[in-house]
Image (cartoon, rainbow, N blue to C red; front, side):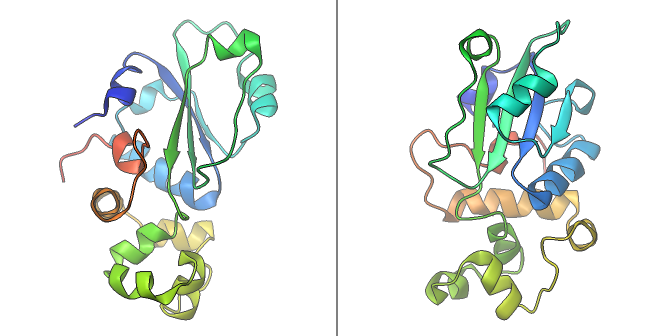
Length: 179
């Protein structure tokens, strides 16, 4: 099921801005498997550029032949992203939240949500200290650990167990894949 916020972007070509390497790798894996709500061929780019001004300078000064939107994949519910007036009305922005941090998907995938939630630790710290996962943020680790099916399963479970705020979108909202 596609959320109404994502449905409004039907026909747009997304520029996907990822907070870190983990977010970028997950999006790349999903894209290569055509598991995103946007066809892979429609993606303008998957980038680590995050600041509104930098995105404007790098991507928005072009006359695209199609409508472009910005999809931001990050963990902060408070982070502000404001395009300048010229761009704000032309380029819709959608935030995909991975709160408290993207490593929560690893905790879900490993089946230790209950233990983690009682630990009081940040997900990245829990993965290192309790699961012994070194280099969890490295591209090499991420590419060997995640495949499309495991991302889809973890994203769906994240939706089920996490406390999403009203109107908040999560990675599962970007997925259009029957697992």
